[in-house]
Image (cartoon, rainbow, N blue to C red; front, side, top):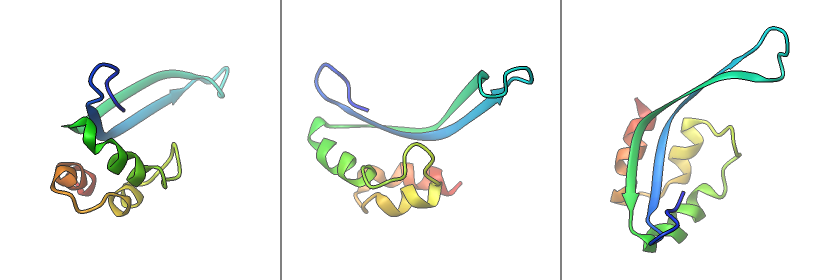
Length: 85
């Protein structure tokens, strides 16, 4: 995502834990988001970041797909490391 003011890019990864109800199983009753890693990148990284992740199967990409999509830029290193863990 990008910040509205300044365009700083936030690139993160983590886990979404969805809980669905028994009575209406198509509706989520709870969502817990755990952020494993978050990097703040300059606005100038926007094209690189969105070019890399734009090829992914949204919204259910696997960690392996994301690692493969990210280029070897040092800025992406902490995210790639978190996806291996």
